[in-house]
Image 1: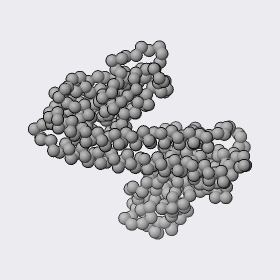
Image 2: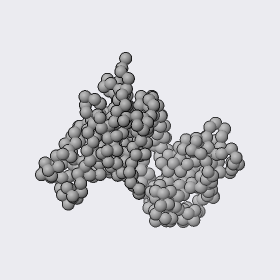
Image 3: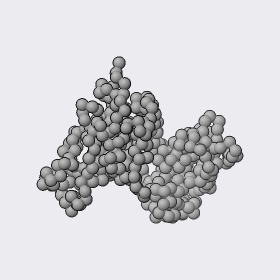
Image 4: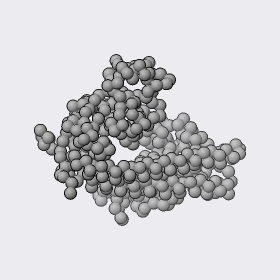
Length: 406
């Protein structure tokens, strides 16, 4: 039986170091060949992404050796998204970290670095860090705050067991994400090839092929997924990811009367009307199947084509690169909230071959979409399983109270 966990400060089991000051390293010091130096932008999914990493000379590496990284170190964002962290793998050993990061170097005799990564990324730890951040306009971390983060520390054997379980689940999640990304890239290329074969004379205003456009409704709803038989309203995230996700919905309060005319149906084509992120405006999904009693929100539109336009084909052409360029040129709104009007959507030109050709193209792309959907469902299940294990392995202890560590 393992010994009970101890509640310690992060500073008791690691050394926290801030990166070099701006005066110590400038962008003009970057070179074409040398040692990478990472910053906040390179933290992705608890790992370091090497894309676009700047390089510094060996002379600067010697000068800044205090800020070198070792395998097993953790790095945290110091400003802004301060709950973002990553593990330094063998490939990043010897790299440098910038002044926008904090480095956590675990004491190996006290804590397993991978366990520490998972614990610091757990919901309660992230909440503690966010709640103790300083800064009025933008949250900031310093070595003192991070060093005082409470950590439940079981014995090393138990730490390794927990890390192995969560690492294995994270690897399955990453592999599934890679499969989805690969199929998605192939899908984009496939669509481009198919649409390139359509005669230019077949380009028409979308308005000629739309029977109507339905706008949605956004009542004030609690952040609760509707249960069986309950009415709900789709969140924008049900559509903006490019795959229809009905679980991204909110329960309609019992004191409000539902609007059945806005209920989403199988084979609907939904479009994002407005979003704070411009690149998500105009995103389109085809609803293969959906639970009953889910309604459109006011930031989504339902595009209802005439009999001359296949619904699946409509979702394909509106997701093409050509349509994307048109949407971006027709968007309105402010810097904080972009949108596209129904009138501008109707003015878009789209390639529309005969119905037989539309259906043939739809069948080809639909095969890829079904593969993406199947993998997305697998990914959702893995994330749910991972969340459950994290709660059992990391969250089964009482939260640290102020003064408990003093």
